[in-house]
Structures are given as structure tokens and as C-alpha cells.
Image 1 (cartoon, rainbow, N blue to C red):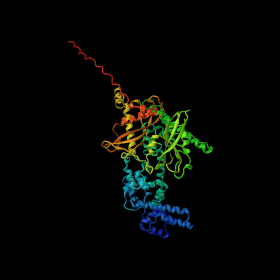
Image 2 (cartoon, rainbow, N blue to C red):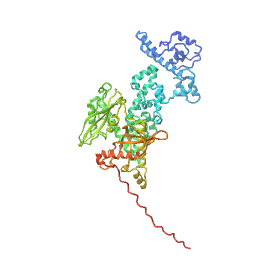
Image 3 (tube, rainbow, N blue to C red):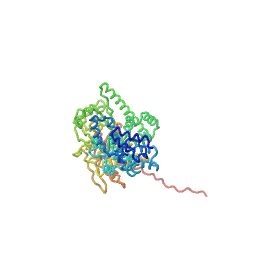
Image 4 (tube, helix red, strand yellow):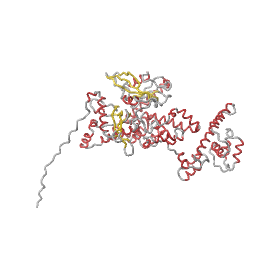
Amino acid sequence: MPLNANLDAFAALLPLGLITDEQHDAVLAHPGFPTLPALPSPAHALDWMQQQGLIDPVASHVLRIQLDRRVERNALDRGTRDEAVAVAEQAEALHRLGERGIVREAVLALHAHGRIDADARDEALERVPVGGAEPDPEATHAWLDPEPFEALVLQGLVDAPRLAIARAHPEYASLPRPPTPAHAYAWMRLRGLLPAENEDEDALVERIVAAHGESAAEDAEDTLDESEELLEAGALGLSHAVVQALRDDGLLDAEDLEEALPWVPLVSDKRADPATALAWLVTDGWLEEERFEAIAARVEAEPAFVGADERRQIIAQARERIAAETASSKAATRKRSTGLRPPRWLGVLAVIAMVGAYLWQLNGLPACNSDLARRELDSLVSSTSNDERLRSEPGVEARVSALREIGFLKPDNVRGCLATLSRDGKTEAIGFTIGSDSGGSGGGTVVRGAEAAIVEARFGALDAEGRPQHNAEPVGRPALADALREGVDNLEARMRAPKTLQERLRALREMPLMAIDPDPRLALTEVEPAGACQAGDGQQQVCPVVMVYDDRRLGAIGGVRASGAASLPLRAEITLAPDDIGVWRVDGDFDRRFAMAVVEARLHKQGATDAALGPLELPEPPPPPPQIVLPKLPPPKVAR
């Protein structure tokens, strides 16, 4: 006897108008009906009827038109119409799976061979049709647990050729495994690997609905929303590498890392400092405050050893930023009832000012010389700003003028701007960007402080479509940044390695320009190509770049007071070459070129002119002390 659930599944199609009474009777008379397995839903019943030829297949979009006409004639209520469309769309999705061999028998085969457990089997049986093409266990297993990039194809967000382009990208092979399809999609967005038609997300979802039905578009919408959040985190410099660094430094444990990785993008073009990253995890709710305080208590109780002071400083800075963000949130809440303007949390990497969407005009952004930009810059140069690039000392009058646009980066919808900052009798160029907090036209405006050199390099050479002309080809932007950061990290390791006096003297002879920095902390927060790469010897490429170096030892050169972290723009031509497996790495005299750029930037930071600099050479270290040679004594006499 068939299960009552099967009788109910077919009977549920009648009031929806999806089958007639005669078609229902034909089901009961069909020879295969008594042996049908339990059908999880009316959609499974409708799909089975189509497989057996008991009804003609009807596309859900055609059915929707027919039902809408019945609603207009008051022959059907809206609720029944919506339910009928949902069942028809689910049946369509089941039919597509059946055509690929993703059917009940394939799921049972996977369970029989131990490849899925009982819970996964039961869940899968509710999602696959009872029949279709020849069962294909491999296709079924891939569908049940798709690789995140392949999941984008299943969701209709990308097609197979676009996926092939993504997999051919130089960075793809070195990517961490994406925790979700949203991470894969966010990476493709970041690297410009998506077609232009994907930029209009509403239109994209409508196309997915037309091709696969509304229920099939739900996963795609979730992926789009989650990828947007990941890109926002990436804009602040968060990435898997940054969070992993917190784990390596003992500021997170393995469980903390596992919980944090799903909420940050795979890679980012910026790199947040540890305090900013740790504070973000807390303020965004991915690390509980109680857990943060437990970590802080452990770090603060550590005995003095190499790195302990630095870890305590990270905790202290993170605590300050958490407190500032909490105060800002409370002030924003008060503003809704009192109309007071809230103070802003001005982080080290970005100074964010939210302004209502009413400032937007037809997908445009406020101009670089708008009242908004001037007002926000005036607040940034106040003594309360945490942005070291712009902050003025208390009592020093500062004035911003000559606000101007350098370029408009269309893919990111961001303006790059420069201005002139006058303070303490001196003038200097400062940079800032104007963009959207969500990357689109529906969010608020964000004004961020930026290095003028980076703004000039990033926005000053755009093509007619508003995209960067210089992308460090054939190396590529991601590979260039990775190679430079690896080179800097290796340089730091070598500089910290010497222990004995002879080792220190040898290191001084090899890298004299860095010897002025007794304890360098090298960290590149931004890397931007400043021109086209030129072929060198063999496979070498010589690439002009602008880098932002987080210089925490600027005070090592006399006369400058270090202030936590001095943002130092560096310009250099760096030689790169691929290794045996094709990974680009710094080559040639990278250590000396980087050291030269650091020293030159430090001296410019102190106000030294080009004429005053002269040749940037340090005296050779003193020779090692002469060895004392003792006279050779005769052997002692042996008594006989």
C-alpha cells in the first residue's frame, strides 16, 4: 500500500490548480504508484507525474502568467497563486537535478559506500527527485558538498567559462580554501573577474529567477549579501592572513581563529594592523568581549620577554578602539533622540564618516571640493584625530585648502582626491578618498584619509573606463604585493637574527642603510604600481611601486618623535623574478633598494630637501678589533 504521505502529496496539487481530477485518478491507477518511495513534498509528486508522462511539463514562468490571469479574473486568490508557483518552481529544480543523475538511488549509493552519514542521507533525500536519468553518485556527491567556486555556478552567479578564467588567475592557486561561496565571489569581485552585467545585483537576481526559479535564487541572494559584508571588511584591511597573524602572535587561539575566518575575506589589498583587526573582531561581534578580556589578562600577566611589550601594546590599542567605537555607537543612539551630532571613531587605517543617502545624486558621489569633504577634512586635522597622517598637535592652527580630484575609480565607485594642508607655517599635500560604505549608490558617504602618494598612483593613471592603467603586468597586482611583503618580512627576520657582536657587524656591512633602525618593525599596509613594469635580465621584471610603510621606529633618526605608527610613503623600483614553480619573488638588490627608500622617506619626513640629502650612504662600520696573538711557549719539561 502506498504511504498516506504520498496520497496527501498528490492530493495537495488539486486545490493549487496544478493538476485536474482526471490526472489525479491517473496517478492512482498508474502501475508504479504502489511501489513509490515516500515523497517528501507535493513538488516531488508533480515532478514524478511529469517523468511518467501523466502531465505535460509546464515552465513555472508560463504557469505564473496563467495564474496571474486567473487572479485578475478573481478566479484565484493571491495566496494560492503564490503557493502554486512555489511548488512548480521546486518541481522544475528537481527535474533539472534528475537530468544530471542526482536522484534518490545515487544518494542511497553514497550512503551504502560510507561517503555520507545517515543524517546527510536523510537531508539529501528530501532535496532530490525519486527518479530521472541514470544515477550518478559522483555528480550527486559534488552537488551535496560543492567546492565553493563550483557552488557559484550552481547558484547561477557565474558560468563555467567565467569560472575557468578565475581558476587561471595567478593568485587562485595560492588562495586559502574559501569557507563559503560568498568568499569565492568576493575574491572574484575584488580581482575584477566578474562580467559587467553582474554589477547590477537586482538584475542578476531577476535573471537567476527567470532561469532557475525564485527558490533557486535564494542561495544566490545570500551569497551576494555575504560577499558585500566581506568586501567591507576587506576595505578595512581584514583578511585571512591578518587574522591568522593574530593566531600566530598568540592573540587568538585555534577556536577563536576558526570562528573568525568565515567573517573576513580571503585576501585584501590593504593590511590592517593587529590592534585594528582585534578591535574589529570585538566590535563586530565575532569575538566576545569576555573572551577578549581573558586574552588581555593573559597577555598583561606575561613576564617580560621578546615581543611581550609589543603584544601588550596591541592589547592596549585594541582596547582604546573598542571603547571609542562603543562610545560612538552610544552617541549615535543619543543623536536619534536629541539631534546631536555623534563623535566619530577615527581608526588608524580609515576615518569613516557616515552621511545619509540624501547626499547621493544619480549614482554620483559628492565632489572632492564639496562642503561634505571640506567639513570632514577639517575634523580630521583636529588634535582629536587618531589618523597620524592628518592630526595636528593641540594649539597648532591647521587649514585645508585646494581640494581637488585626481581620478574616479569607476569599478569601486571611489573618488581619489588631494588637498593642501597648512599648519605650523608649513604646507604639504594630503590625500583622501570619497566612496560608499557599501560600494554602491544606496549607502552613505565615506571619507577616508589616504597617503597622497598612493592617491596619485592609484587614481592618477586610469583608462577611459575608469580602471587602473598600471597593473604590474605580467606580475599582477596581487603577486606584486605578496612578493614585496614576503621580501620585507624576510628582511626583518634577517635583521633580527644576529646575536653576537661579529654577526651584528657582518649584518651592518651587508645592509648599512637599515642599521640605523635598531629594532625595525617592517609592515607594508599598501602597495600600488606606479608605472609599467620593464623586462630585466632573463625573466626579471623591474616594477616602479609606491608603498606605505608602517614605520614604528622613525625616532631612530634624531629629531623626530615617533608617534605609535608613522605612515611612511616609499617609492622604489623593485626587481622581481618567478621561482621554479612560477611564484613571483623579489630579486636583485631588493634589501638595499628598500632600505634606501626607507631612509630617504624618513629624511623627507623630517623636512630635509633633496639638495640637503646628498648621497644616501652611511659610513662603513669600523673594522673588527685586531686579534691578539700570544707568543707560543715551549712545552713544559717533564721530570724523569
